[in-house]
Image (tube, rainbow, N blue to C red):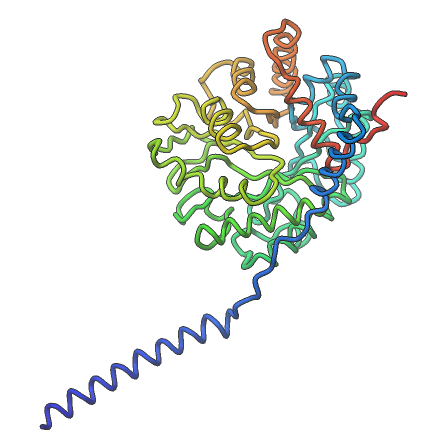
Length: 405
């Protein structure tokens, strides 16, 4: 009898212990981290206005604005739109670099920390950059992910890392505030957010990503995108199709992700879910090899870009390469050949970040090579340029006054 009482007492004690642990876990989850009311994706004004513009042009049987601007551009100006170039300059553009921009008229400029020192300086520099092509101003872009990848570092709004964003409301508010500040400074494109789903803490990109299960990462991404768009700054989600938990840094070497064709749909879910839920205007493609899918890195693969992204997913926004001067593409071919292959694979804009004493010839050489191919009828870039112009109109960078009277 005494043994039964002892067993009963032990059972009650264990139940009490389990109940205590359960109550404590609820305290942690709901008291210290209370459930937040789920919010809806905010109305995205830039998308609504663009739909209205297109509808109005169709109803009035008007040639689309981007086509009217395109028809007045020289072939040199059209080719220039395909490139995002890094520059030399801080307080002022380097004189030689300024002349190059005025001649080539690239469609986009990428700024790094070396180009940024203060609010007044940055605003002055972006005005100078825009002035190098008054009729068709460039996208002026930065990598402002927050955290370790922050070109602007003078306040918390600019440097809040993705990993610390706890919910959708916070994701939207940070992106909108950051976007408004960027726009005031003359920056109209942010190469962010990173929407890859990375769980390996040892991954080179882990501390640049959102935390949570896949759906949480997707939703934080969507709300971040909404915030930037409502600040009239074009977000660029990256790096399609995704680096994976164990791939090395493409700045140093070409990653190889060893997934099968059957695993592909699951692997790209962060991107496919986002593209399926919100209007995405720009995707950056990473230098990543999927050797079971194609023998070319993603940035040079028509199978991955044209077929799987554009055709299979119905994606209609811009396709932007990661920096084409990373070590991942070393020894694949000449810079000129690689540029041509990347554009033919489906990229719309190629990034060449280096304009310095030893690299400045590369930008001109690559531009001249593509220009020659277009002039000879070996490359058709019309749809790429029209898409770029359409996005510049959408974000208020390019207006009807660009058309000569």
